[in-house]
Image (cartoon, rainbow, N blue to C red; front, side):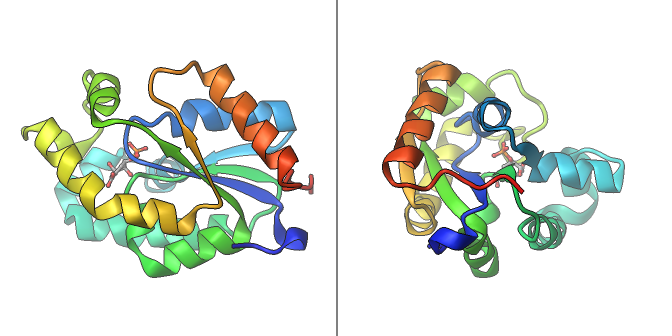
Length: 182
Ligand code: S3P
């Protein structure tokens, strides 16, 4: 957990379809911080989408790129950082994320994840597989890691983005964790 003086960022962790990007964008706007999405950053840098990286380099290749990007982004200040659902797998990532700011776990249900990922083709881990079985298995492994790395847990599910953002802002204020603008 980051010390008060180093709480310059907010990091969102949680599984696919928990609303990290939507919540992160609105939260950043309201707090006057920059929004950064680690997956989008990987796509910008490589010039290809995440699915293509999985196809060419496998998940292992993607994780190497994800590690590099997290290593760089966590050096920034005054950002809301949305991470990919598997970013917490790597111990170094967990350390960097929790050291760079307040980590918020967006917690949701498998049903809601299924609903929110139903129409997307850009989640290679779910393509041509049984999404419910995959999401359940991933959650088993990752839920303890989301819990471990986070300072706050906020339920998302069916709630509107605005309601989730308000709760995060309130909890940050209650804990005196509002990030400093750079
Ligand atoms: C992944 C989640 C994705 C993306 C990649 C792998 C995962 O991000 O990083 O497809 O391992 O759960 P989102 O959580 O933003 O969908």
